[in-house]
Image (cartoon, rainbow, N blue to C red; front, side, top):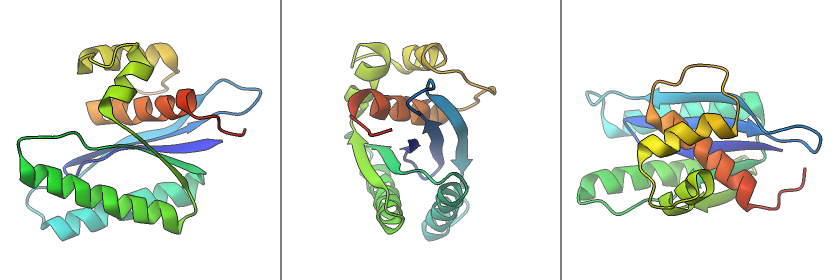
Length: 160
């Protein structure tokens, strides 16, 4: 089973592909943080993000998309833009026949740290304890994507 896990955003989008088979431990097959520039129009940024995620889908052939649900923010413009990114990625997942699982930040933190109220540092400290990382990760969005994938593996009864 391959899971495409996404921490949605439009400035930075965390992406990870996790794999689990019946006879192996879960592994990170791929992870990255896609970045766009504030100098670009939003539509251009959205197109770049969708193109990058489609490239990952085509290269790694996941069966599942695990994506974070939005949390409420005081910045309505940010929430709206992230919602638009999520919508585009959900449509892309449907077009590519991926099964979709959505998780709240509380569910992700609880699955990874055991405490839904954990802070970002604790989540980032727990991820390498739960799954082997084969590179240095620079952005918390990438850690978040891996955590979302781990949440999916822990939460769903996926057929391997």
